[in-house]
Length: 275
Ligand SMILES: Nc1ncnc2c1ncn2[C@@H]1O[C@H](COP(=O)(O)OP(=O)(O)O)[C@@H](O)[C@H]1O
Ligand SMILES: [Mg+2]
Image 1 (cartoon, helix red, strand yellow):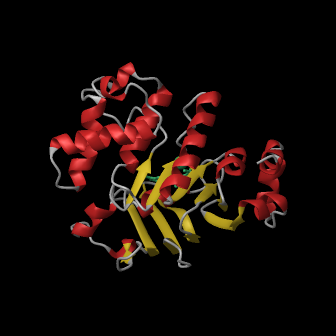
Image 2: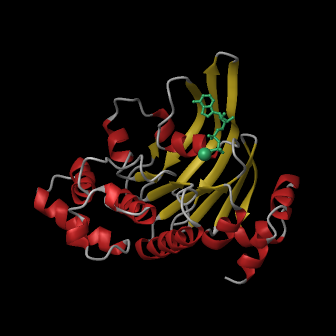
């Protein structure tokens, strides 16, 4: 199918603050095509998280937005995410169902007082009417897919007994368990050691190839973009300044900010050509 899975068009987000309105996104437009990884890259404060949270409809009350976000799930009617009301049941299907998100800090997404297996199984039970036993079995299968070994024993453990990398694997399993068509990863490896970071990137890449879903991968690191993404959207100061295939943007960036970003990260190009 040639139509993109997601289209963001002229998205403007402003926050009301004591100092007046802060414009976080200024007419942001981009597509997320099917069956590939699209990276959103930009320095801190450029509007990446606000973009991801807008797609999940997770903005705080102080935010006002305009523009359009449309999701076109495989065989269903397109959903205008931006115009769903808070009480629309489709919003529940959307969050954690059609679209799910992996956040930067693995510890905040897991409850410290529940066993790993129950937390992943709970993610199944939130969206589907299956028995607890079936949910547990599906959780076990997904945890195996994200590379956990000795799964049945580990499912009976608590998050504090896991390393940061293992916790992030669990969160990826939770995000994928309802087979979302779009997985949003917001700096999922920034809090991890470099070697673990590389392992998680390889995992996200290989799962995307296997599951054929779309991934929106948010990062400040152009080296990571070169490693993982097919397409890239470059953000600067709340605006999209450039987008295209990773190869094209890294090889011949057109916007001065992209050129500057690339020049400040000499490793990015080399990694791209060694792929
Ligand atoms: N809740 C909020 N209230 C006010 N300003 C906010 C809020 N959330 C984000 N912002 C502002 O929006 C801009 C974009 O933030 P963000 O999307 O978090 O950047 P990034 O993820 O690229 O680092 C920043 O200027 C930030 O200060
Ligand atoms: Mg952010």
